[in-house]
Image (tube, rainbow, N blue to C red; front, side, top):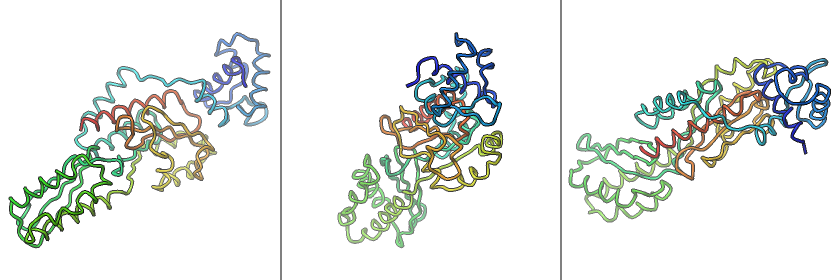
Length: 339
């Protein structure tokens, strides 16, 4: 167990290394921080931190840099999320409040996160498996063509055109719309198939083919849209950190091309109040051992609908990054709740 003084030395080393990208020596710590002890004591503390694996010496005669273990302790015990400034919060609100639909919300969010953190931003679409039906709309385009619109509480809108093969009267369409919403509105999407299983038989024989075609399209929509969707932005930001990735960002960029890798990076949907940080080798994805991932759930109140986060080098300003990720997630959750 490290005492308070060694923890203070570790905090100073992390902060200086993140700020300067240079290994930190005892002389620098004395000059930049009021640690209240002699340079000899600081050297002894640094030696103890190195022995316990919290810092390392990249080469002879150099200062020290934090290890994954050191960053982990810094995040868990030594750092506090940095609050955004009033101007930053106002900019987030203005930028996100202008979104017109869910796609626009996600697009704006991922670009905003990349700009705020200067890292790679990753945003997962709200999963349909956690979504609830708000409304199903049926719109007549032509006598034999109907547009089916599925609207969820997460703001997702899915549209399909159905060729009914026979004219559909407005009375039939209105009746189906009313009865369909009566059984599915407010249900989780996973419960919709069972809810509509017997709906066709409740119509007249003449209307059943049309009803069956519309319901089949609805169920196909649910199946098609179960695949998780994820977007990212800011990959160009990685070029600023070439030395952090042993001189090459290629393995990181290759890993980010895989959809399943992105989903694994964000992990399972988390508590929207809890920011998760995975550092270095805590990321099991090959090629990403030199990166850290900061993520949090968003939307859905106590139960998040999806995750968003950033990926960058382990040499990261964790308090600022964690604060930005949490703030953006809260704004996005509020927008979805009000949609």
